[in-house]
Image 1 (tube, rainbow, N blue to C red):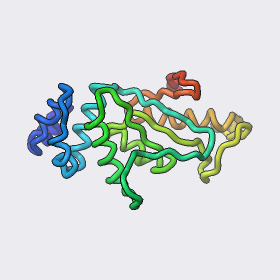
Image 2: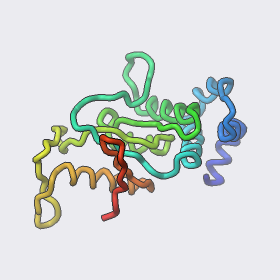
Image 3: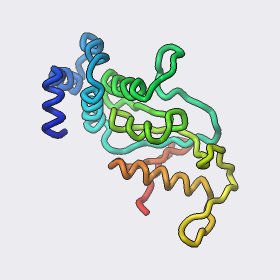
Length: 188
């Protein structure tokens, strides 16, 4: 954590909350204060906890269909804004037990917001691979790749794009298969 970020957490009065959380203390009394905290300070606290507890791996679950799962368990039926999602992700990381997974559905919130959520404590992504137009990728779909447009399976191309996207964020993409196996996506 940078000195600037640590100073911002100190100035907001949350240094002791961060230290208590890292020691495993219950934060029930501080949660109301945290819910009203500046979003960037809240994100810094959550990301520091994520880095210490689960590291830089981002587990990626690719669904085969358009089945939806919740981005987070937000209460009510109101429209969720990007800042609402980021605040909920950060609060989940802070309130969760040590090492717990915090998952975001990129198919529901968009890749860009899901990427930002990685800085707010998220460590897992879930979603469906789709074309640029939003159509589901069929098992036998091919995409042109490279200057000479060689054809490759679309799902492989999209997985590689997703891995690059996570790597550009300074994290390590790990695809998790349907049977629970994990594979680290190699740099290309």
